Image: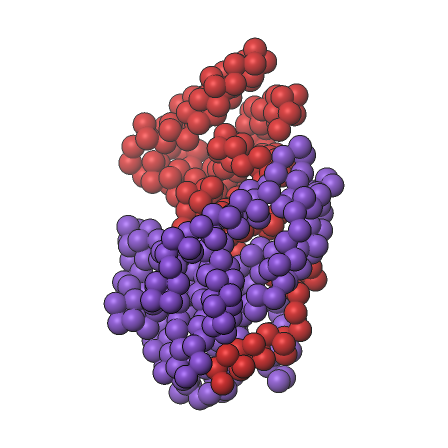
Length: 185
Length: 223
């Protein structure tokens, strides 16, 4: 992603977090995934996962009743702010570190809130993986990128419409069945 | 007897595993009278990794059992491992430099699916008739319609995607999916259940990741 584009995404994510706008966050995550499909940089994938997870946490207001939520949100915003500042100064390593730091914040959580946030992040990884697979990257490569198993991705992707677009259908059904029949002869 | 093989990518086996249908492999193998092959890379995806995750441990153990009972086999009786590794690396490099977008080559495949395709090519060179069972879409499109994959990339990325390699040498690879294997098992009478069983099997395959469309399922039901 280009510098200006990332800065703009980060700015909009911060605004959406302040406004508790889960839909905007989800759209921003989807925007990030286009670039992640091509570049496959860890930070852009992590950013897409983080933003999507935050959108889910904000959407489910019961999570916000946990005392740790406010601190988690505050620290996430601090890291996003730091990431923007580092990127503006072209300090790419520190920028990436600040993004990756957000997921690490989960480790500092405790109890049920930690379990819930962990689950949200795990589900977000599978959701984002499915989007990357939808973009045309193979299932195994995608699972590798997100650090999930093909079992998880296959199950999720099977429920989407990825296989139903015309471009996914390449051979007449009869021909493929003939391949099986012929090899078993 | 003429040698023949079905080469399995991870997805096709996973679809059977996730639907509790791995037992059918034993019956299919008896019908087949040839090799059911997997590569080391595929084994990592379907046994080694899931064995470390409680949720998928059971499926991994069942697949491991198929390997131990030699229902699923490694190809090294008929193909030299080094030769397969070299072919896999060569293909891996070509296919990950085939599509170019936004100033860079797209890394679109991993060693798992590529090793299955490489194995199919090597078997063919040795005159061993084979098909590859691949459930995921990308590897299938790379072989059967690389231009469709290019169109998907362009459409999804909202940008021009260029093809930088000629990969037409993959077009003769015969690809099947778990759905066709289930269809065959059903037609051969390997399933004891009656009433809508074919429909149930095909939907079960689809919902566990087999890249088959609703339209294709309806067509298969009418055959």
